Length: 200
Image (cartoon, rainbow, N blue to C red; front, side, top):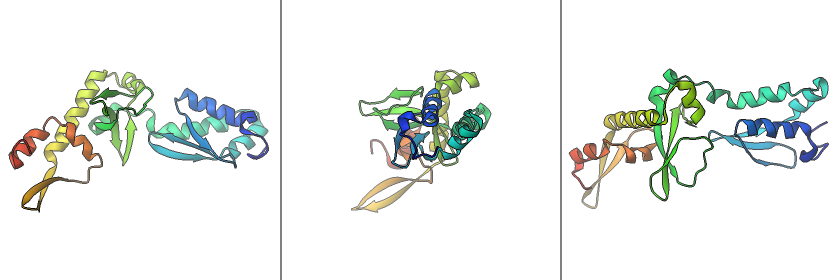
């Protein structure tokens, strides 16, 4: 059975794939006419071809290959030890209507919210409640840790200036990829006040 032989709603491999993803609280974005499956997990987009899993199912009659495929998708984000990510846990500004199943999220304004992430290797991994259980940490402890980490980054960050129309404009002179998070740092005001005064 190739991906073009049967419609997806009768394709047992596709249906099992959806079931396995649902167990991990992952939903599909879309499929195309060729049977490719598109999904997003931890802000990374995946294009999945189930043909190998279909062939394996035809030969073995089980979903072993399919289960390995799902584990490959989630593996980088599972079993992250607290010691490995402790100093990469940060608050991240996001739209208030962003839905994060089992994620740690707190409303900041009607339009924005704070979510907690692991900022690692250029990727942002949403922290989920199940992670707290494995770490033996509470929601409050991780929120405070995230703010502390952000405050340390803010203290180390240089605020550069440029002159425009006779006024000094400040900017964060950094390669940090979550610059909007600086806005919720508890040390930002003191840092800016020393350089520019307050209010700015």
